Image (tube, rainbow, N blue to C red; front, top):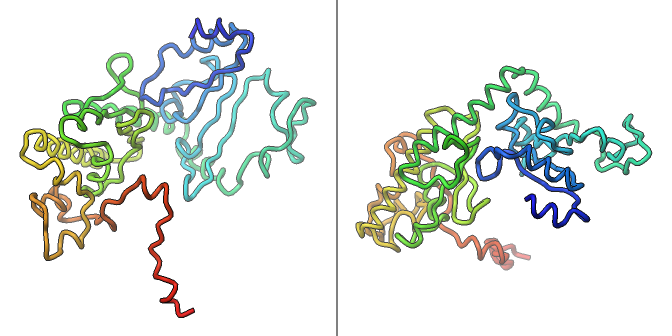
Length: 326
């Protein structure tokens, strides 16, 4: 970084850095990173996406960041995606205050301020009260404990899984932050299994797969947060360990490389209860790979689909127009 910053000092604008890293580690040199960029005339934008590992423990401003946004959906309980939108405050150092957006209903009237960037000066009034109530109910001690438990949960799961999967990155003291990456890439060579097969198989255990192939292709990123019980964390770990045993069975030749529970996952109730069962493995292994599933089973509504084809092509499953009687 020192060499690159010096090389481009004449046109160095800024650097954006996520802390902790999306690789699941606390960057020990975060202060040095900020100092190097500042020394060569740049600014530092700190991505606050991973504040769930910082609240109550550290402050982005102390690292030397000039700007930092807080993702309320990741740390302060607002909905996101289908229940979105994503939003949150953006903190800036004092020297950047004159350049912040203004708004007709805001007291911020700096001469160099740009125009409004949102309809309301502070974002959505239907979403912000959720974070306000969460922060108020948790209090400073509760928020700090949530951060500590999120980090503890991630390290607990990484420790349980390390004998079965490679934890791709670790920080100082051989620990991870609030999330960690499991490397699945070598399974393609040893068993013909890809990360998508593991993700689909998790559905048979009743789990929606964690983030897949981000930030590293062929991996799964696990971020347990502080919200799940230890029993749920253990169920998830047990599912991944059971899947690893199935991969070992493929590697040993006990399961076929093409006709196996991973390649055919997920298994629907129609497939399992049908008259014909064309697979070499049992219906029980397909649908009930863990004992608890007999008491509480989530049945995937559809079997394996071609994700890439669906992303690139519109596939209509509607009845033909003739059926509408038009």
